[in-house]
Amino acid sequence: MLRYLTSGESHGKSLISILDGIPANIELNIDEINAELKKRQGGYGRGGRMKIEQDKINILGGVRGKITLGGPISIEIKNKDYENWISYMNPIEDVDFETKKVNNVRPGHADLVGCLKYDFTDARNVLERSSARETASKVAVGAICKQVLKNFDIDFTSHVVQIGSIKDNNIYEFDYIKENVDKSEVRCVNKEVEKKIIKEIDKVKSEGDTLGGIVEIRVKNLIPGLGSYTQFDKKIDGELAMHLMSVQAIKGVEIGIGFDVANNPGSSVMDEIYYDTEGGIQRKTNRLGGIEGGMTTGEEVLIRCAMKPIPTLYKPLNSININTLENYSASIERSDNCAVPACSVVCENVVAFVICKYLLHKIGGDNLADLKSNYNSYVKRLGDRGWKK
Image 1 (cartoon, rainbow, N blue to C red):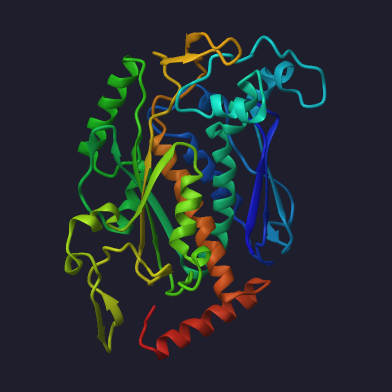
Image 2 (cartoon, helix red, strand yellow):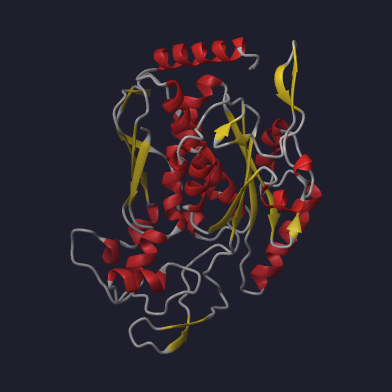
């Protein structure tokens, strides 16, 4: 079973992850992993924190000479900003609890409920862990999973399809997105839409407000049968939705045409199945996003996620002092006014973890050689039944 845990605070010394279940003899390209971390820090609308941090992965165990050993992989991402927060965040020395104390909780954040749940009088104890800074760990984990999956030609991309009211309604081929998305400051492959988005971000920033949006994640070269219809917790779409909804600020997930299934008759929703001797079993449409009955179909997996606007506003909303219960304007922490481009990178790597988990469960193997042997055997059997890779 592939699994991971993360630990660490936004202004703490480091973010720590333990990734357990990666097979042995996978060669890791550290530069590719760090490139994913760098992309997470980019994007128009990001705040001052990203100018301080330069995230890089530091592997503490489970890897030797860039080759996985089959045991748990321990990962560290250092917080450079910790240098400015030692007197407030040191875990083993006395600290100043008052100077950075957060009394005025922010609507839309974990502050209030976290204080009530854990009996805190300082919302800093909540926001340090609930912060989206934790997504750096998610990206590092997903980037390692991509290193496994590229041995089977499984590839990922993501892009922004909407920020605020500005939307890109065009449909793009996977390769076009892959080739062009990193050229855009907002990870939008349509240059005209990109200009409108940047203008909208600037406008909203000048008003002290924030913007959310929608990102799309695509996965290609999958085999049919990842996941299962036999139990609710074996359905791959259910697990994808769970992991994506766990990403900070994500409030909605849809697969394929998503909520539009409710607006169309069945004949315009289902993906008809065809067969010919040259192409094998195939579909001419992919409205259901590459998943049927909780299992991958072999078509591209297509997922969209809706991110809410960041709750830290420079024109703060009304809230309360958690200790006196008086009405106040919510506290302001240094923040972005739009992190949707970064969100697409985070969600892409979260999807990579889930895909890797289900691939390893399906084909099995403690090392790369066994994985490839089992994979090839399964693909051959699928070929005997009419499906062609």
